[in-house]
Amino acid sequence: MLSHALIVETALALVDEHGADALSVRRLGAALGADPTSIYRYFRNTDDLLLAVADELLGHAQEGWAETGDWRADVRDLSLRLHAAYAKHPRAATLAGHRTTGRAHEIQAVETLLRLLRAAGFPDGEAVRYYHALADQTLAFAVQHAAALSLPPDALAADREVWQGTYAKLAPETHPNIAATMPLLDAEMQHGAFAFALDLLLDAIAARLPAVASD
Image 1 (cartoon, rainbow, N blue to C red):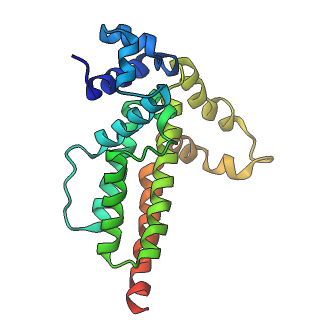
Image 2 (image 1 turned 90 degrees about the vertical axis):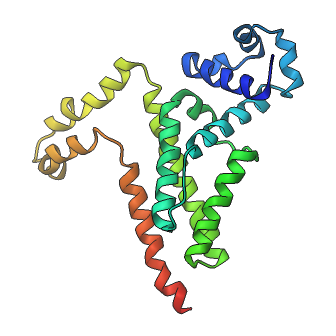
Image 3 (image 1 turned 180 degrees about the vertical axis):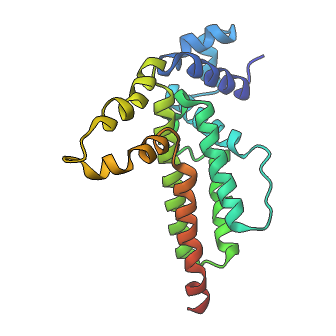
């Protein structure tokens, strides 16, 4: 029996395995063992299906999340969960991470983040601005990371090797700052910077609280 949930999960699995080309009614129908035209009873077109896949990723990110009462820790945890959900499904993330779905899981994420920021004491204008910054930073890092993970293994390895193969060989006379920091730079560039960047942004937002309280 077809269902909205079964179609979306099957589409997500196909994109994970085959990339963007897998998101076709013909291929999806074959994977479901159903007439491809039957999918149109649930989705208007493939873009409608893509938005459902994008919203499913947001749903995965929020599964099991529990509020602690510490707004900063809760925002941080939710943002990290979103980043991890995209990393788990990198091919789908590169297709869907920049879309606005207007669907249940996205709406819940927006509602939750705004509630956390407003409950922390930020006025509405500040809460909306900080929500926007957090959402854009999280999605940008997530999609960039997903794009890297979607590369063929040899291309990904080659990109990582550039630091040792090119940067490490630059002379101090021509590139003194790279040469001086090369061991640190090489080590740093081998892992993602999202958690650190998120903490920087959250520190900046938290620093606004005293000023907001005194206004």
